[in-house]
Length: 335
Image (cartoon, rainbow, N blue to C red; front, top):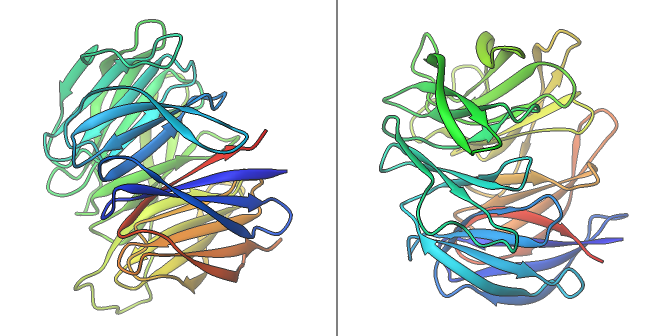
């Protein structure tokens, strides 16, 4: 079995396209896919019929039909968008949620039966500066929006999957006690736990999730960097958890490493190691099999692959050329 891997290149106007061998993690380069503009965040519906892309240079959300055999993309439609750094399809495949870093807002677009987005947002909500990402929880009833500094908060919403409506939860946001700047986050696959990577503090925060209320409560903050590191030029970017929930990784820009944590039974984190990666690892991803990690270097235009060991340790496999400023990785199963 193989997977198509698409890498959006924010400094180019194309997606890098690879075929991934699920047994070895090796990538075979395919022809680049012209997007007609600089691509940013990517997302698919659960059945992987459509790829949604934010064309950052065009300020447009575009829907593409996916040829899951050859991996080609056919443009279906596009709608205006702001400077959205993050897009997310809810569990019903009915709505595209987005955040807007510059505008300090979130939006909801409807997705129709053939993958087209509503011409205008069904909802536009102003939050605060530097709204960075959005996801719903495992129940699809609550949504969260981290904001880096100066807002330094995670906004909490109730989400109605029948209408696509977001409403402020109570309280409407939570804030770290110190200037951490939450950026992206992941949920534990089986437990009511959430972990945020904090851009400004170079830390990871562990949160309990109140499943019935959808509210977060932090119980641990742990550094991604070695002690006494000079913080000048340092920031974090991405966070991922292994499919079994036993290991967590976070990327360090500037230090240019992936930090690795073991996850205890109570959800607390213990540093297990750090692994060198390409310069400025803005994005990395675990493949659908859960056995490999791929980390993109924003400043090098290269992608490095690792095998995940039974102990969560990453073993470097190979390095591949992509476009300029790689920003996002999306997998689609080949059929």
